[in-house]
Length: 289
Image (cartoon, helix red, strand yellow):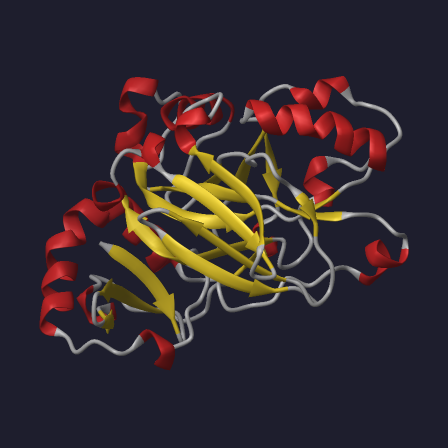
């Protein structure tokens, strides 16, 4: 299934003909307040049990054309947003030049794979602009795009094995890890509001297929093809990412994991338009202001 949130954070199933409101198939009341919407995390946890009812509601309902709804971020108040650093070799290589240009030196410890946290308040939806912080722009610091595959955790857990990791994944979505290039801590540089756009929906793991077989692309302003990579090139693949992160922190339903920036990162400025897409998952077109 493709699960979307739209309008007043209604739950929708995306079909070939549009989006069908399946909110009424939820076993608990729908709370439209993103801050208190525990129903969303419960859906992530219990999706396998709820799937039959959701599919039946999608089949019986009337599709609404996508252009007639406002797609929202396909995640509500996750307990955490985890992100992977240095997970494509070509990106590690390009970061030497980026750091020399923006920092004047290379931080060698930042060239190794690891995970860090982004603020959940950085999440924005697939129809929202990326807003550049005025103080960062005034300081002349570069702000970069990083188009990434994002894991949505279903059944959470602690100390998850690699062999069992994919059983803890609800599905996948597209994300941008917007980043200020400065000497500040990663979490600070990547947690400004709108610095974690998500969308356009979640494709559940069974429909998405092999997570090592996605193709990621990002095009700037219609003709500047900046990023292109296959997820088979991840240094640390999806099962290992989930297992590694769960050894440090308990993964809870609805948590998000950005899997790492492909090569081709670069600066964005006000007025730019970013089109990011991942095969079988969809695409987003985002403005920058």
